[in-house]
Image (cartoon, rainbow, N blue to C red; front, side, top):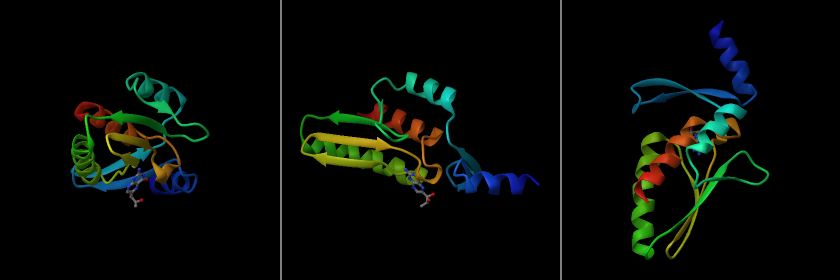
Length: 122
Ligand code: HBI
């Protein structure tokens, strides 16, 4: 019965179940509701909602290309570990990042976690 609910929700792109080695088992990934979204964004003041899309974005600026690329390398390793990948653009010392969970067509806790990690290493 529980399986069926998960499958129906998955069809609506609201929820999916992911096997995560990092978490040591299965985790449920859900699209954030309005309240959860507002609470999450309050803790990420540098990130702004993307126009016309359920996603968040932040522009990072570094001293030079080497610093920007070092940041991207650390973020990429974390993203790969999480199996959750940013959309980003880099030119010289600037890195523009957009985060969204494609599997639920919107924001999830995984975007919040990756955004907080990027904030912690920039
Ligand atoms: N990265 N941002 C983001 N969103 C996803 O839904 C996503 C991802 N990386 C891998 C991934 N999903 C896998 O679960 C597969 O859907 C490819």
